[in-house]
Image (cartoon, rainbow, N blue to C red):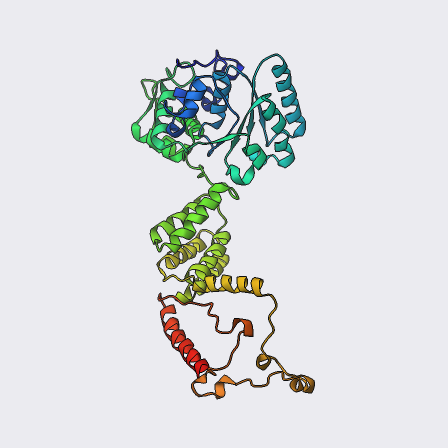
Length: 450
């Protein structure tokens, strides 16, 4: 089947205006111009083949900022020769949604398709998301939603069931360099003809600093071109000195409360659990660099000390509390070093989740067994009546028993007698605990057999 060419440029792809930002002027006009998405848009991929054949479907585009979600939505409309209507979930409510749908209904009545693009669709509530459903089902709109958040958590299952989810990747640095070179060479839309010289190292630096975001990289280039001083020949040279000014206040890709946030804290926790101090220190620093509150990291690492180290090294959570307190006293940036020490210590400490697992098993047991009575010999007997009822009768005071342990004294409820919840590991201090506890439990079992 011959490839379908995109429809002629409409207002969406109107002739570039010098007033528009460079990133907007350089927005790709064909699928071939989109960089960094081979997994989705390589010539042999289903979505690419469908668009080139003019077959479009409702979809959700999930990916980080600047990866091309809006551009791809525009191209969906262009390759399908459909009208394009865009709304932002940040700026729009139900009135704007209804107006867009009414416009699509009018197009539908005249035999025209409408691609309705909803940016930041995850910000719409359930009622707002539900408003699209009947129009998707009837074919009134081709729905294209864009989100930086995991659709499984943020979008209604009813909406997801009517759309295909396409994952878009953060654009790799080498692909961003390609986009920058294209902008420097393009005389129609870019900076071509302006005698701007950028060496390979500077292009690579801007690409890395953009952190997967093509739009951001083009913004860096545009600002650098404005700041660069021209030499005697009239050439503007963008080098290290210029980029120091441009990149001074950049921020990493990091969304507090969003998926990037939880991905990175998950990476930190799992690096600690895997006893990898290099990775633990890296993810700790990445979160700080992205703007995470150090107190949050202190709290999470305290949890790691208890959950993943436990009694293998009880000093771990003491150090966690000390590091947290140190940060509260010193603040940033000095106090952050104490938290960095903690991240490394937790990673190299012996690991045990034995208490964590035992606590979970106990909670499950309580849920299954309900309210079990306290054995009579363990009950307190502050009154004569209680003593008369047998409260406390038969209790053995362990300090008065040879060896300091009353081996035949049962402390669990009768229904759970002999149950062993806590299984110490052989790591760190817990290895000694296990040795002692194994001997004690065997002595108790022998006592019960007598």
